[in-house]
Length: 121
Image (cartoon, rainbow, N blue to C red; front, side, top):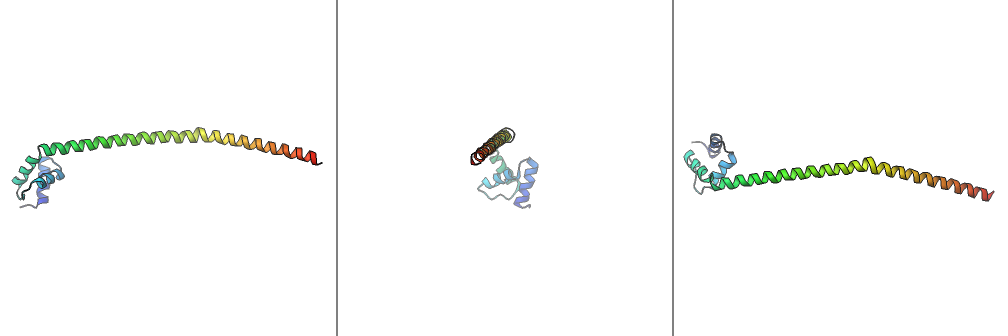
């Protein structure tokens, strides 16, 4: 007589179920399951509304997962565009503005120095 785990694995392979679903079916039974026939009866009972509900829940989880993946992908794309904007447009513009302001201040200081030198001499 196979162990419970071996029985679950055998039935999962035979009926193309997941081992987790076979285990759920057996565990859902309030009776002690010892034979293959008893386990199959548990699977038949479980295959009705319980399995349908479980498959619906799994499908809903997959839809939510896909929606979250799409949302994350969209956010990454938006952040990439913003980063590109800052790197390619805003930073160079600011850099040139700062350089122009530095040159203007330098010119003012030179001019101020010349004005001060002319007044002191």
